[in-house]
Image (tube, rainbow, N blue to C red; front, side, top):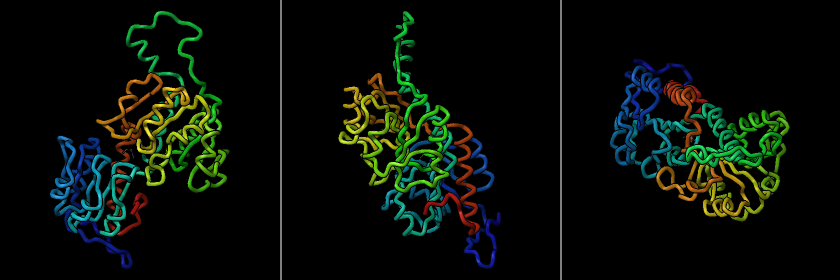
Length: 336
Ligand code: DGY
């Protein structure tokens, strides 16, 4: 298949055969069908997690790698990739598992899946917020233990979400989508972001210039910021102390933004009434066990974008982006 475009001024890559892609995990069937049809794809049918050495060895002759958050590509791995590799595509909006500077210095493009993850991730954010506020873990446990004997007016009283106030840390695409959904519950929206949004984008949300000023004003706090050296561990004991008593914390970003010991202490003392968590330090196998035991924690296993249509759209976005890249066209989902 001839994939190249021969525009006079465009930088093009001439390919006389289908682009070769190494796919490190088992993807949605529709994605794999397209990969087989449109590309020369090496798939991973047993879905094992490939080591860095295995990825480097399997990359020989590849034009692109399609990876997930389970495959950290650190600088020394990227340095060992063969020169044929023109793109690293990650089935995620999170980028912390890829050394972007190393990719840039090798001239390897990095493509991600912005926008495709907004709606499903925000669905889980709402699920976590509602589940934490309305004590879903305790309610489910009562039912599953056959321990519910009587309805009483005070049974499992939770916190009202409707008309509540939500502070959002990180007002990118996911934060803004969350604000939109939360407005459906008549919530007041406050936020902190590195840069203030435009008047239209704010849509009535109040901007707080620092995280320290946002926290005391956030009876509900949602963490939607990317994991960066600046944000890692930001929710520590000192900052938790700034939250209103009985606050509810939701994390759909990355576990490393939270100091687990500090949050667990606050959940035990009631300073934080409940937490809804989809992402964890040490996930998947080394999650702090206290989160699994505390009744006021509503947890899900990093399923933010795990909705069928969205997952398929993520794969399509990467393949579309690769086609554009190889044709020398601008790639909307190119990060580097
Ligand atoms: C993302 O898009 O970053 C999700 O966490 C899935 O990897």
